[in-house]
Amino acid sequence: MAPAKATRSSRATGTSQAAMSVAIKKEKVKRSALGDNCNLSHAKIMALHQDKENCHGVLDEGKRSKATIYKKTVLGEIPNGDMVQIPCRSQAQAQAQGVSLKPLRRISNKTTDSLYPSALEDVSTCGASLHPTADAWAPVVPRRRVPRGVVDFDQKNWDDPLQVSHYSMEIFNYLKTREPAFAIGDYMPRQIHLTTDMRAVLVDWMVELQENFRLYHETLYLAVKIVDLYLCRAVIKKEQLQLLGITAFFIASKYDECLPLRIWELLYICDGAYSRDELVKMELETLRLIQYDLGIPLSYSFLRRYARCAQVQRRTLTLARYILELSLMDYAAIGFRDSQMASAALYMALRMRAGASHLDQQTWTPTLVHYTGFQLAEFAEIVPVLNAGLHRRPCDTIKIIRNKYSDKIFHEVAKVPLLTNQELFQNNLAPKHKSRTHL
Image (cartoon, rainbow, N blue to C red; front, side, top):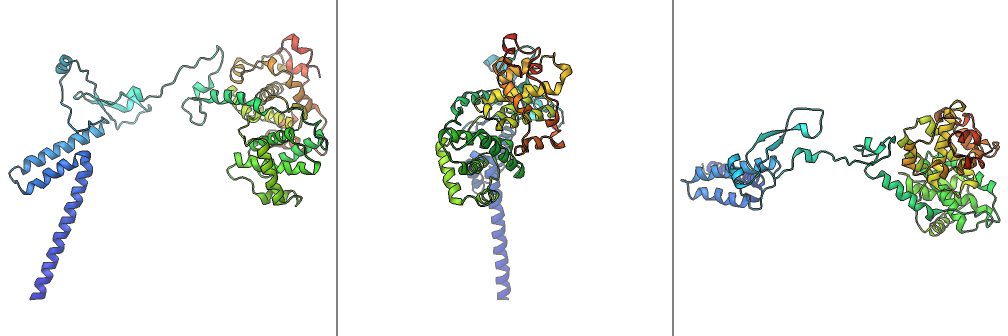
């Protein structure tokens, strides 16, 4: 019998311990629900064992305190530091004391098309709500001043986070201020070992690399810009030109790509002409010469912004990309500002897509003037240079870009009929500028 009694006593002890653990868990739940008032409520609950007469009163008071805190939390009010319940005032008392009462609000279960105000409903007029009204949570759309006849693209896409319409104008205005820091001069007279044709072959080869590795177009434009900046500040030999090209791609891919190029890939496409140490050394020298500043404004970024704001068709944008990409090989275009280059390419694409039957229409609209910041006369000298590149007879060794944009994927924009300079500016440019636009 003694072992049985010991077993029953151990079971009873285990049951009491389990009950105590359950009580402790419940107490923790009460503490977390009561928040900052948990110490006071815990002291009152622990006093129940000593004073059984006030048991129900203390428990009722704890429930009321818990309910008050829960209600205030759900309704979104800001509780005071001592967790003291705000007394309820009637409308007459509030007016006598000079206190304005606002209705408390809660989220309604009704599904509506509206996102903010209609999803809230009045539930009570008791208590001075510290929560802002529903209208305060609605998105505030400031009135943007645009000229008459301008399509306010940023206003229409204000709620689209991908368009960053709140500060997109400031971004591109800042990029325009950065352009003088990356100006490229006429460096070819100093490069005694290079020619403009050699540079064109290098850029054409870089376009082929961009297609084979399926890199972003921003990577290509940044790499070409790095090459020009390096050649502006250092003289290299002919044998190092391809090494500079792959080094520029290596740096640009680190800056723009999610998965940058690897060294062995770049060395493989050069057929072992350079070693790993040579590539790393050229990378260090290139970064040092450009002062480690890779935030270079690119004409491709400006073009995408302008075309999006003007809401041009995809075929027109692809044609403008073809004109702009073809200009990368043209040494005569390296001295122009990237923002103006993008404007000129887009203007030419709009004129060429409209065709010879619509030459009398005004192409450079007030919307384009507003978002680009340029009148047609400000970049008119760039258009003949780009148009000359389109009319230039294709070379057998330089044909990657033309073949690329002759594909159906790019809408065969390389086959669009060309226009003369006079046709491009017909009824769009003042007479004083027409004298220098003849082809």
